[in-house]
Image (cartoon, rainbow, N blue to C red; front, top):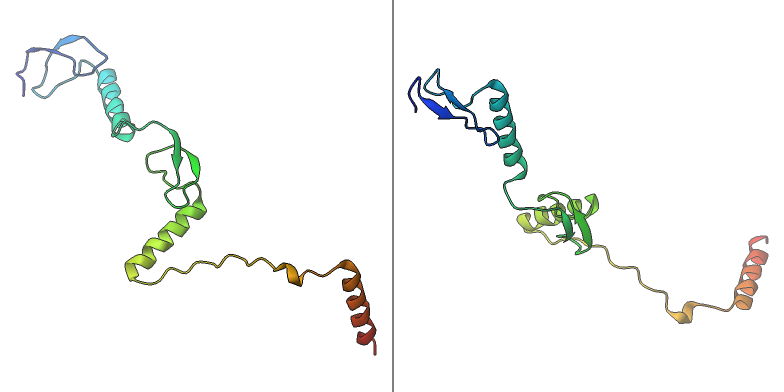
Length: 130
């Protein structure tokens, strides 16, 4: 460290003041510069670890585009996040992942004309009262 009584430039990036040390570990000219420097370092630690800039990204689960606000934000919604975590847990346990089967479309042969529907309905109502 430095010597007591030695002239030193303030360690705060925004301050150009030269001061004389009162202790061997003193780095800042005043308490305000010390607080400013500590807060700046905390902000850089929180936000400046990477060169991340918010923007459009793709969901890691479904591939849908969404606005990514933070570096950790990799899913478009809570639903995708839960599904991804569930999938990961299942893979770690070695289990097969259960997925819902898509709804099957009704074949056209099961669609009946309106007249036939009305006839069947009236027939069913007739037999229901007997």
